[in-house]
Length: 156
Length: 148
Image (cartoon, rainbow over all chains, first blue to last red; front, top):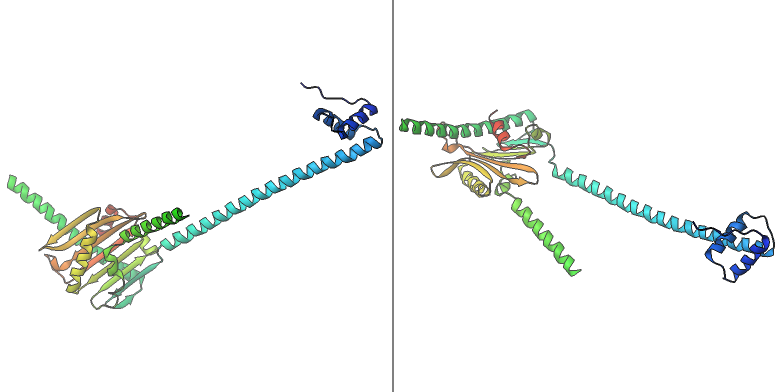
């Protein structure tokens, strides 16, 4: 495990701060300065300046991070909004199409040019239609069965 | 962009062609022309009443005008040529009875019945009937329905 740098005196801290402003510090040393500035009780012109500058950068970095988060969240929300809108449009469109494809309730007949709107009377006409078809279909079946019977008789 | 426009146009044309094929010749006979004709009976049942018998559309015309019989028979014969299943009976070279199962329209089954009672052996009548049915009902169910 990597051992972190420990600042044990105010003088060491001030030296490191001096190196920090000259751009001579390593990342590890910068972390140590930040840790120390946050917790140590020491105070001097250099330490106070460093606290102010590093505090600003820290705050700024956090601000940047928050802004980026907000932007990501905003994008995500916008995406969700668009997806939801598309889903709603598709659902409404689908329902409208389905509804249009469903025939309306109609039960009507025209007999000799006269309109019949009574459901029971119209349905009675439907039954009458079907009965006609049934008779014709039966005639076909009867014809087939009589053909079969004739063939059987012929073969006997 | 040009390619996309061509693809969209091709899709539109294909859809239109498919829709045109979907139409039946008998449809034009159901355009309301017989509503006010003497001796004609036209029945239209859709929605809940049709639903009770497993259908979405029930449309029929019965005519006593002999001149119309040929027109109906021709339209039925043309549609019948595209039927996926049929039961037909000809008498004296004329269509007497026809039960056609047509290709599905979307998810609905479609059936055409035709009967020319002029050609009936027992008690012929001067009546020609055409029925169009559409719905989820199978051909067997339709046959049971007419035998009720």
